[in-house]
Length: 166
Image 1: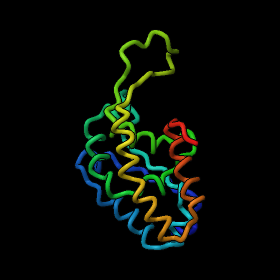
Image 2: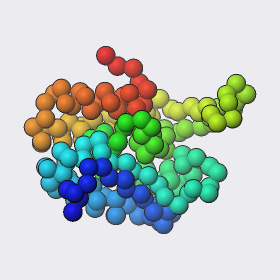
Image 3: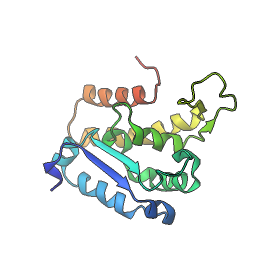
């Protein structure tokens, strides 16, 4: 049934976040990873979002349960390979923000009301990449993808994170 779609938006239920349940999302990704055809089809085409917090005024990275859930599921998903990193890439950026000790910058006087300045721990952002590049490399090797395809994916991820590269 998944092969009928070109893009998947997977919304994690608030109940799963609050209970710390990662079984549904890990089974979903395991199902895709069990098929080389599905892996190829959904490279960069899965948007993962967190549902049920629309009326909460906090950002997802400010919610302890969301941060804990992302930390728990982190090693189970091939984030760099599967996640949509095309701007605005909300799901991927939420994942990174939740694991990077994101904080509001105290002085917000020089930004418009619709913009929020934040800071992230860059060591933690780069640690996310270090943990995930081996999974990306393993997947591209498994699928017989070229080094140029691997670089394209890597550079798209770096672009999403606004990290300069050559």
